[in-house]
Image (cartoon, rainbow, N blue to C red; front, side, top):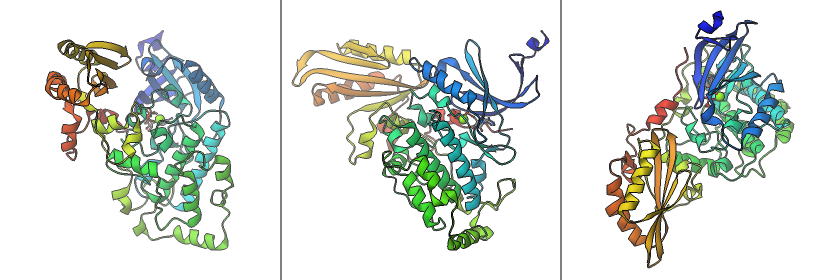
Length: 465
Ligand code: ATP
Ligand code: MG
């Protein structure tokens, strides 16, 4: 057939156009239906990157729910197609791009922010009532249509990746996990609904303030701030908004406000007293120097933002920010003062198989046996009983990309002094060929911005054409 010859026609049905953006798991293209001529967005995902065992039923359920769900503020999922290696999600195309491109130019007027927040909450409420949780509400997923209406994308798709929560920090193209709820970071079993509500609160704050409520160029510090959730509202926020925000950005998910209660809140319902109305009017007519973006359809809105310094700027993640924040580690220790460093960590630009065989070699040299080989975990065990039992060392390997790994080496049993001696005199020198950088070395140069992860570049969004 003729269309088979055209490389840019997908399944004989969609003519693929320009790249709209790139996420961690695939690319999103503009496309047009050859049948109806309708514009769509197609997200192409590599199957093997997302399908994890045990998740298939839930993924199928959520996706089928989303195919049936119609809401004016949710990107509709038209159809899902699959080839042997790829899954294609054919979605409604949001012509207006990302909402946050507007905020980058300066904070929004309260009236405009209110409208977007209402649409966001309505969308989230609609999906929650159908048992679908977003779990990844962030700027890249809050889009606008050609009429300036908010459209949430990727609802239900997070099920594809949820089993790999450490990806949260890797999947943020701006490099900021600033929208993630504290209980998600702490990797306690969490309630998807409550986590979504938290993210909506961050969105509201950013719309009104033009910058993030909990932000720091150091990721550990940022997580500490999110964890503490000490909210400081700028002077131009009205008290009702501050109250609503502090109820949403409650670090305890059990006491965090529900969607039902948000919808009853006077600010949400826009029940303004006469005094408030006057204040709101004044707020909305502030002089240009305060960089309030005027209208959602005005493409050239506002002067350069005053709040620029604090606005949503990309930050860079270094390898050990990632390793420390990986959900596969117990994060609680990072929130305690005087962190004790027992483990040694390094990054490697080599494939996992090379790292594993190197560790096996070292075990052989040290006359230790490889006790257990779970996914990414090697347990090295000595033969002799030491002062405190048999020395046992764990080496855990985390994949960032197939050619970039983070490895943690720690003692799991035995004498600490003996372990430290072996680590210093045998293990570290023997690992020399495969180590890109040790955490301790990197921390010494941590302020040098050129020591950034290559992965960050990969995560950076492609410029939209
Ligand atoms: P993640 O990999 O975590 O999903 P992401 O949301 O940035 O991150 P994608 O969902 O793959 O990644 O989307 C990539 C970009 O494509 C988005 O940032 C957005 O700008 C654009 N995009 C996605 N869906 C649409 C759509 N339906 N209409 C228009 N643009 C879209
Ligand atoms: Mg997305």
